[in-house]
Length: 596
Ligand SMILES: *[C@@H]1O[C@H](CO)[C@@H](O)[C@H](O)[C@H]1NC(C)=O
Ligand SMILES: *[C@@H]1O[C@H](CO)[C@@H](O)[C@H](O)[C@H]1NC(C)=O
Ligand SMILES: *[C@@H]1O[C@H](CO)[C@@H](O)[C@H](O)[C@H]1NC(C)=O
Ligand SMILES: *[C@@H]1O[C@H](CO)[C@@H](O)[C@H](O)[C@H]1NC(C)=O
Ligand SMILES: *[C@@H]1O[C@H](CO)[C@@H](O)[C@H](O)[C@H]1NC(C)=O
Ligand SMILES: *[C@@H]1O[C@H](CO)[C@@H](O)[C@H](O)[C@H]1NC(C)=O
Ligand SMILES: *[C@@H]1O[C@H](CO)[C@@H](O)[C@H](O)[C@H]1NC(C)=O
Ligand SMILES: *[C@@H]1O[C@H](CO)[C@@H](O)[C@H](O)[C@H]1NC(C)=O
Ligand SMILES: *[C@@H]1O[C@H](CO)[C@@H](O)[C@H](O)[C@H]1NC(C)=O
Ligand SMILES: *[C@@H]1O[C@H](CO)[C@@H](O)[C@H](O)[C@H]1NC(C)=O
Ligand SMILES: *[C@@H]1O[C@H](CO)[C@@H](O)[C@H](O)[C@H]1NC(C)=O
Ligand SMILES: *[C@@H]1O[C@H](CO)[C@@H](O)[C@H](O)[C@H]1NC(C)=O
Image (cartoon, rainbow, N blue to C red):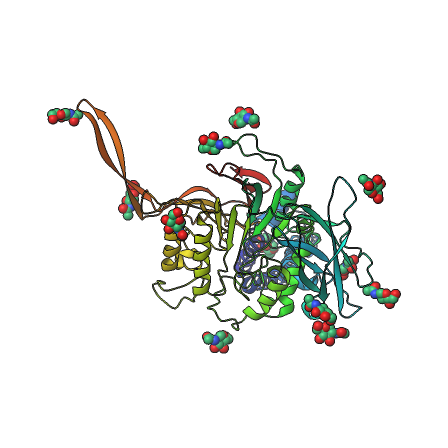
């Protein structure tokens, strides 16, 4: 045994560990410089020891067989446990294993290049209104030049075949828009089931979708009876992670699990007969996807080109799991994907700052255009309501300040226009909506440490406090967030006894890594709010009012579930009793219910 054989053993061992981490734990960008380096130094060492081995075998034992027998036990421990070996055959076996690992790493890292999903065909429903629905279609016609597609729709009348197909909007498809287009079907009835198919210019029905796509319009907001529905929320997906081999290149496991859950639910709406137990019966109506729908720079940054971003979106829409979700009856997969650009991007309100222009081109085509119409022309933030439940979806990237200010006090996440839109929306729905969901791609809580102190709302203290004060003045505000690759539900206590508590539900990833071992969420904030509570005590001298001083943390964790590659939360609302609106949360980890 020489120094060389020990060095080779150590590099080989480090290399395998790194491969395992990269393919199964965290697809870190560090792999790009270090993995090839480790592989090359290990292989060089290995080849060198094989050569030395041959020489010494010849010198020492000219008669003996080169492939000297070694015990199975020894073989296994050499291959697995990184013990130095002098056997040539073991070294060759060992080299093959490491090369297969390298092939797996390369396959995972460059699979967008190996398979660009350029011919993916799909259609999906996005924004749903009481009287309209937005539909997006991708139909590549590489041989025909430009083409247009018609949407043919009708009401689904289960009792008769009366309703006739009607011409909906035309969608122009061109190569420059990557054969994708979006349009709105209008003049629909509220709370009604519809279906649509696609036809070409000659009015013949196209082979895709194989069955008419169905959707229900939202109920009439003027209807006072309240509502019951359920939706899902999550964020962060990467195809084929944890890596399962080249045949799973198309798979996004989290979408498969979510689709399985949807399949296992009854499709008809069941009324809740018991207001203390959440009914599992309600089907999911839509998915709020909060960000990191694509990772432009993980594991490998493919460059700032339109095609590089478009390719990543196409790959996701081609995944069988996501297809099962957007093709599902009565599903409205909304994807307010707010961080489509690059890790922890800060737009600084500069739309020409790379990679914004190219990244946003793909984001608009594939996701944003089919979302709700923005509150202001050309913006990405929007609001919508389903009955008496209101949502505001923030754009937390385009306007966020950089990190120049050392104390962060003047940093803005939203920009002035969006901030005033959010506050205006809050006043508007304050007394009309039973629940107000504020959707943020990054966590609102300050309890997450490390980079969350810069990238999440913790790094924007002044703007955050202004929002939090407004939230505390409104009943039933719930912040939905993602991005941390962990689940947590948090409660915020206001300064005064009249303040309404604010809740946050942060859920991610749907199909991505979680950090093992390191926990970054503090259970409660250092800062307290002081509450004076009056307590009436009866003594021998009569009743007496005693003031009890309480110190409540400003924010504290209700539930923390860091582990799991696949998480989503389902939120079920029941506002049928206006004086007692109900909200149920159920969080799923790796396909099974983990928290209610
Ligand atoms: C591979 O072969 C080298 C060279 O003999 C040896 O030192 C090492 O322990 C073997 N195993 C691994 C995991 O690299
Ligand atoms: C898309 O391309 C792949 C291979 O490039 C092919 O196997 C598949 O059949 C094509 N799909 C359609 C709908 O043309
Ligand atoms: C396709 O449409 C684009 C823009 O709509 C136009 O610039 C281009 O000339 C058209 N190509 C053909 C072949 O019609
Ligand atoms: C609806 O159409 C189907 C097939 O076109 C037919 O068999 C059925 O009798 C029709 N039902 C009614 C109520 O008209
Ligand atoms: C689609 O193309 C036609 C003809 O080129 C044009 O008249 C129409 O305005 C286009 N529609 C949209 C929505 O761009
Ligand atoms: C429409 O019909 C014409 C004539 O039958 C044919 O040449 C053309 O290819 C058809 N277009 C499509 C999109 O099928
Ligand atoms: C309501 O919930 C309670 C407690 O879980 C259960 O015992 C009861 O059977 C439920 N009632 C109905 C009607 O589901
Ligand atoms: C916006 O970004 C571009 C590209 O980085 C830069 O050239 C330009 O000066 C920036 N504009 C402002 C107003 O900062
Ligand atoms: C919401 O309404 C309450 C009273 O109904 C009021 O005190 C509070 O300031 C309002 N909050 C906002 C943000 O409009
Ligand atoms: C907040 O209250 C807790 C317990 O009531 C206490 O341990 C902690 O020191 C308080 N924090 C501050 C900053 O006063
Ligand atoms: C009741 O009043 C008497 C006389 O004022 C006082 O001495 C006693 O401590 C009081 N008891 C309590 C429980 O406050
Ligand atoms: C609505 O909730 C209130 C408060 O819990 C309750 O008193 C009332 O009976 C409920 N109304 C109905 C119709 O269940």
